[in-house]
Image 1 (cartoon, one colour):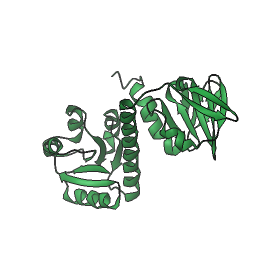
Image 2 (cartoon, helix red, strand yellow; image 1 turned 30 degrees about the vertical axis):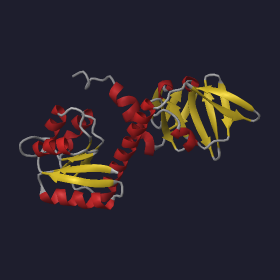
Image 3 (tube, one colour; image 1 turned 90 degrees about the horizontal axis):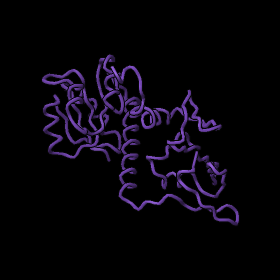
Image 4 (tube, one colour; image 1 turned 180 degrees about the vertical axis):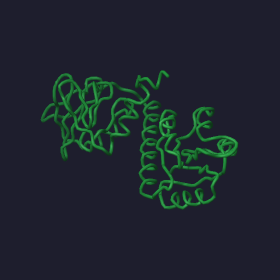
Length: 243
């Protein structure tokens, strides 16, 4: 369950978003306010996972709030002004919703927030749990040791998976979902319903394909935004970053 706050100086906008939140089973409305100053006070008193943040507000803009607050919860920007989109994403917002907001677009944004929250939760769990650098799989009558650092990518095929490594390809009876649950999300990322790749082994991304050595791995549209955010965004050197 994601606890969320709505911040908007327009009462009708707050009411509309509140109704949307009540329709989504994994969201819980913890409160709402009409400016970022009041939001800061609410954050001090309540554990919050997600903020729906308007841009143009009295006392302080949503952009100014993001610039001064350290380690804010996840943020989805809600505004009537598309011109703030680039700066919003530079400040690591989860999504950018333009008013009037449809429920379909709202649901897509909060689903993205849920996926990111689960990813961070997995990362925290993996950091506190015991660490090993390998695992075993059964290939026919043989048990093969697989080093995490050797994995290039994994392909799921119904009730078995093919694990491609720097030492070769291994096939074992496993579901890709079960394998994903036991992989470190800081090292591996799902890019397609049938593919998981090693983040460190990615050499390039072009269109809907990921390139690892001589391999071309398909990336579905459903996963593309999350992949770009986790793999590329904070490590992208471009003119904007250094301006």
